[in-house]
Length: 155
Image 1 (cartoon, rainbow, N blue to C red):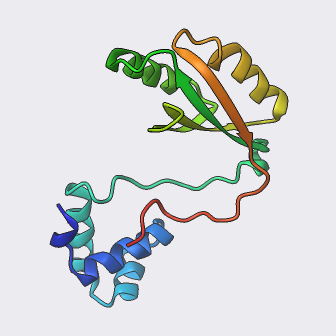
Image 2 (image 1 turned 180 degrees about the vertical axis):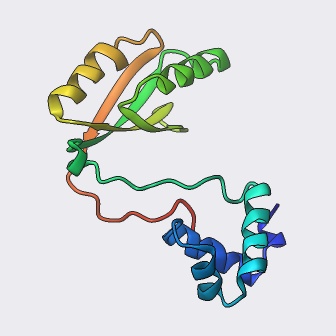
C-alpha cells in the first residue's frame, strides 16, 4: 500500500491514531467523520497493508527510574556486509539500546540509549560497546532535555 492509495479519510485516521492509538473505534470514527463499521474496515486495511505496524504505550522513563538518555555514534573497523549485520545482531541483545539506526557519514550506527544513571551508561559503553570486536570508534552525547516528540512520520 502506497501513499497514493490513501484517501483523505485514511490520512485523518492515521493522524488521529498516531496522536492517540488507544482511542476506541467509535471515538476514532467520530473524529474522522465516518461511522464506526467503515472506520474499523479502514483501520484493518491499513494494518494489513503494513501502513500501521502496531500500537504501543509511551512510557515515562524518569518515572520508571531511567533518568539518562544518550546517543552513541559508532564506527566499525570494517564496513563489510557481514560485519554490519553481525554488529546489528549484537545491538539487539543490549536492552539499554532502545533504537538503532545504520547511518552514512562519519559513523556507521546511531544508537539511542536509556539508562538508570550515568554510571550504568558508562559501564555499558566501556564493558559492552567499546569491547565489541567490530567497534572502532564511539562518540557519545548525553541529552539535556527532550524538546520535541512526535510520531515517526508526518501525515
